Amino acid sequence: MTDAQVGQLLAVASALSFALASTFVSRTTASGGDKGVMFSVLVTVVMSAALWAVLEADQGVGPMGPAEWRAIGMFALAGILANVFGRTLVFESIRRLGVSRASSVKRLNPFFSVGLAALLLGEAVSAPDLWGMLAIGLAFGLLMRESLSGRVGAAGPAPPLGAYSFGVLGALAYAATYITRKSGLEDWSVPALGTLVSALAGFAGFLLLALVIPRQRANLMGMFRHLDRWIVAASVMVSAGQILLFTALAFEKVSTVVMIASLEIFLSILLAVVVFRTEKMPGPSVLFAAALATAGVLLVAMQ
Image (cartoon, rainbow, N blue to C red; front, top):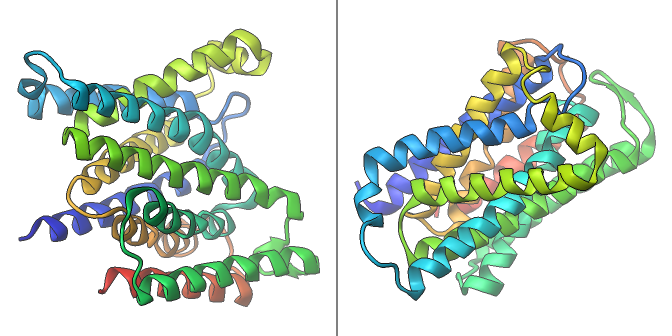
């Protein structure tokens, strides 16, 4: 099995983990708190630290050069982008839009990622990449059209246009995260340590916010008080998805990994509608948007 194939399989596993996390978050009955955002970062710290101790601890022995310190900086920046901004915005998007719509909006992630990878990392953008990005952009346009129309579909009333902004900003934050992660891994290929540093930086960011924002301080103080089994399960799945995706980037280029991970949209809708039955079947426009986004992913992943 080639390195590229390993990266692609890890990306598929990451997509399944994130899809399960989205479904679990939507099932929680806990009120108050941040719906497990900070707790999920703490879980990521524990899981990645365990993996680092088992798999990579020997690589951190001895003096570190400029490349290693640069990698640590990139990992830390990725942690702020992913955990403080990306994770918070995506959790809020799920709460406001539901699993199906939130997962569809999150598909802007590869749309942003491919462009940033080409601009900042010099990754080649092929014709299938461009067609895939176009398909994803059209899929998001369909969701925007549904929101503007104000129609009530099978999955419930279309949410207000502003509700989509959380998903859009979350997708952009995650896209920037993948670029900084890949840049760090090119200097030092230690995905478990990279995930650990990112999670620690993200948690430190939450602590700083808690000093100046009362709501964040309340969330921090009540981090364990507002948990239920679904938030704990979602936190574990988000953490597993982060670790798997970080590792996938060590084997495959950003555009391919992110596009494959975007199959989460299909898995999320399947789990929410068919397996757990937490949501009604989405209307035709949402289903078509999901199919269009999935087609865009396949255009890139099947090269």
